[in-house]
Length: 353
Image 1 (tube, rainbow, N blue to C red):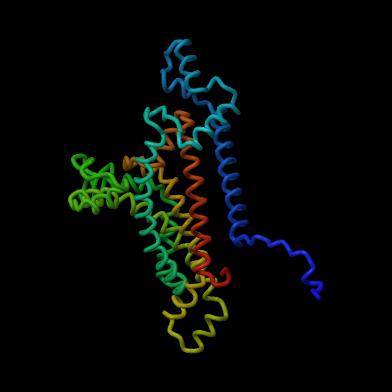
Image 2: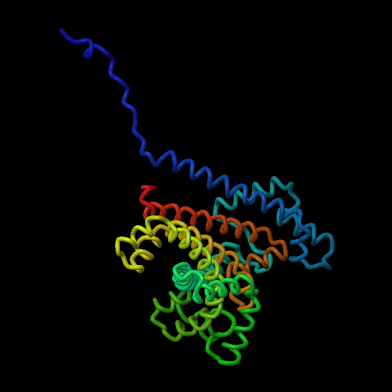
């Protein structure tokens, strides 16, 4: 005789989804909504600013018929919501339109300017972290002593002195007077297009090509602007590192470790410093993102053909195709940096695993 269990209908089998699916969908929706809001805000603000992109194309003395023809060709005779919808459609297909002030496709312009800024910002953040973190730790360990005062003074100067003034003084002293560094641009003029373009970063491309003359020229041109940007980021990183370390050095576990006979070096770097890595990761990510999109003055002083200078020029003439594409890039950069920082949290903080 069959049991009641055998007579019961079979239970439907539930499909098991991985745990990461729902958070990934939520994160993707949040990222898409953030980028859409950023683009919409930039687009509609740009349309009410007192810029005339048509005049930048045809000139201020063009007659009305030419003006209206170009206006219709650019799609500026359509309602704002139609213009924004057309832009979103083209953007999803990878077409950002043409830049008014260069005449090139915006995507082509970005492929040239982004690697230049990434190269400069990467060298600068390496310098900023390489000096800022040890100096911040030393200032916290020797609080109130001469090294602490010296680090705080360096940080104050880095925050207070305009970077364009430092750039001009650096060019006068180290380029025009001493001749230690290269001048404006990314490389000497006779080395332009001397190596195949693979990554767009001249230091990397010259190494891959094995051309040491181009590498030395690129290094001489990048070292001064990178040092200035690195000094600016070092001021911020060292100040925040000092603050984080002072908070940790005042904790009870540090006192306990010292009482147990651990060396100062092991207590500072093996215990206190490890507990500030999560906070430092956020600070470094913010600094790097700021260097990628905020190095406008440095790029202008050194005639560095980078992203910041490109965006500023587009803003000055009201070239909305270039402005919106740059806005999208900036948003993606900070979103990616936040995602990378969140992933680092899992490795640096065991409580998040």
